[in-house]
Length: 94
Image 1 (spheres, rainbow, N blue to C red):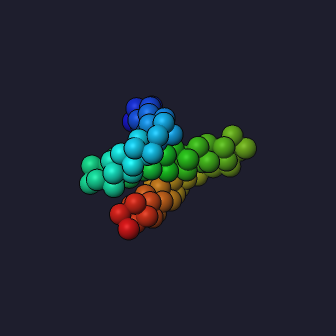
Image 2: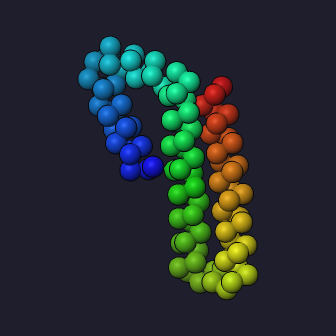
């Protein structure tokens, strides 16, 4: 999902930088209901990827390597991701 989403966003960036008409069409596309859902989906995937990556950095430092620590860290990742996803949805739909 991230790979395809990044390709979509790079195309939107290229189109928005090409001309004023391209910029306006990208803005119109993002403000459409489907564009908002795609944006929230991409932000959701990026949020989860970010939080899980931070968890793995801590695990590389030796924090949470036990089974109990790993289970707690996984629950924390889901909670933090859910909060970030909720906040990003509020931001996109406001």
